[in-house]
Image (tube, rainbow, N blue to C red; front, side, top):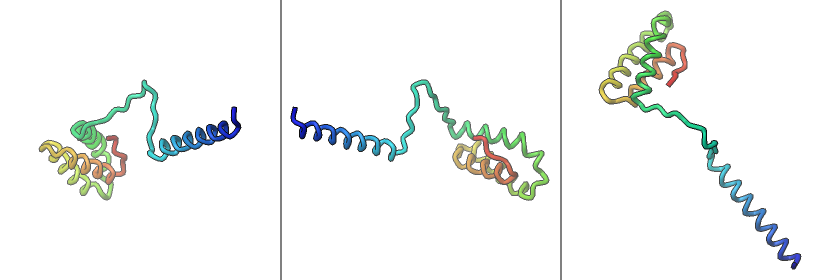
Length: 106
């Protein structure tokens, strides 16, 4: 077999594999096993979860300096959720929960 042909084939293989590796890592794709499932909540489900989190924790945070502002924001968020504006409601509820010093769970 011709040594030049072997070298050319080896060099081509290395370049192709490096290109494929670079392409997959630069896209930020995460490979998961076939058994991995990712749960995705709808905006309506997020509304419910955040409303529950607010209701469970707000009473213990009334001494927080931001409580009254957060309460108004949470009330508006609940109204948005009830009136079909779930995405807006989620944003407001998340901010209200942050304002009283908690991390939103949805």
